[in-house]
Image: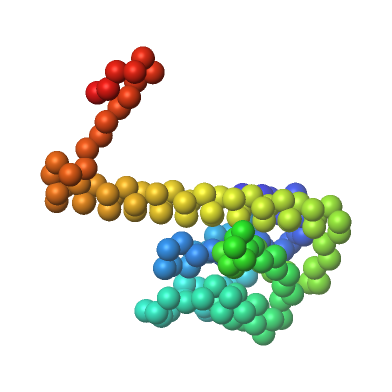
Length: 154
């Protein structure tokens, strides 16, 4: 947690929104308390999967209606899919200088890397679980053979 005295755009609140499987997640990244408007829309109250861009637009409009200024940085996957967004919220105008924009771009790249890494881990675990289930139902069809560096087979 970053204190409000060292926050890039103090007293702005910074939020990170991302999709985790079918669920949307929101995490506050600075400073200590979010403006109350987020409670009006978070978490999304629907049984159907909600698109991140729809929730983001609703969040930004809710803050605008409450008189707050917002700035956002969208984070796309390498394939172009919107995977996350960093949102700044402040009761006064936000002005990000070149240094803050550089830091924000770096944080966005790190967030994208972490989100995509977690997605790959989940996909790999799912594939491993499916293979284990197949191997369990058809014994003797799938087996492991190890060739050691000395050429012996086990």
